[in-house]
Length: 87
Image (cartoon, rainbow, N blue to C red; front, side, top):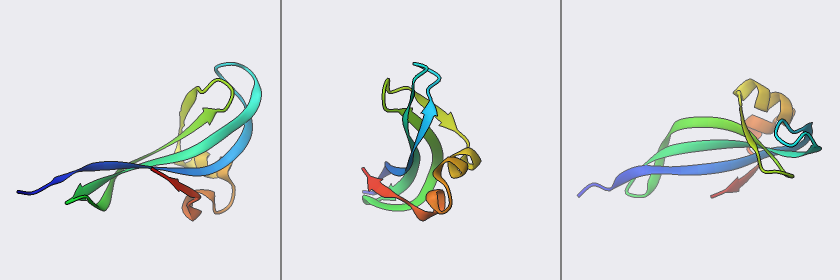
């Protein structure tokens, strides 16, 4: 029997102050990278997909951003450097 599947990893890249498109408040937004990895016998092997999002700390609205925009928001070393790891 072969056990395979996927597992999602969430990386916090930075916290920046932006004006929210949902509530209109200038508030903190978390810039995050979500990576989905293929697993075999519960061991993550390689990434299947990667997406970047910002989330408003006031109302919780999430907005999808491009990798280039996430890198610009996170600053130098933010996207490639990692950040804290959350599961």
